[in-house]
Length: 187
Image 1 (cartoon, helix red, strand yellow):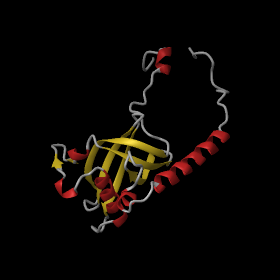
Image 2: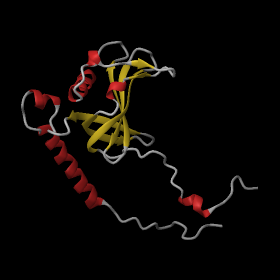
Image 3: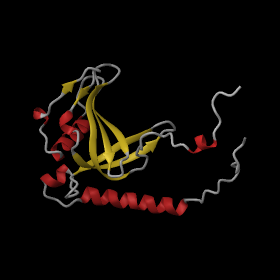
Image 4: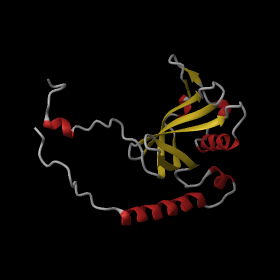
């Protein structure tokens, strides 16, 4: 008895679905979705944003700006405020809507663009994204650099870091020879 119809073409069908970002780097992104989420304890609160890169790769970040004790997490609150500044939005003027599936969405963020310096770590099951900084796409400056009228030092520093990593990874790559894999379809 066969569980499904055997077909050689099935071995070539792409089943991965969406194209998810798996590589650290500097990206120009549009915001696909933004919402406020609560932690399992019902107290901790995060701004969750789904970004799409210029190569249509998606990734999600969560900035937990209220911790499990109900106190503001200063670093997360700061990066949220920097994001809103670069998007030219004032928090107090942004619409926050609760939709039927109990999501709390922020439609004013959707479609906006921003630069993201993002590191990615794979834990064996998930790709975890850590935003190091947001920047203005045109000037390449962070909110601090804009306010202090400085050059785009953060962008340039991370560009150099990622270029060094890319060069190192390129030198270490070994050609994939598909050794030990069957050449013919097994039935």
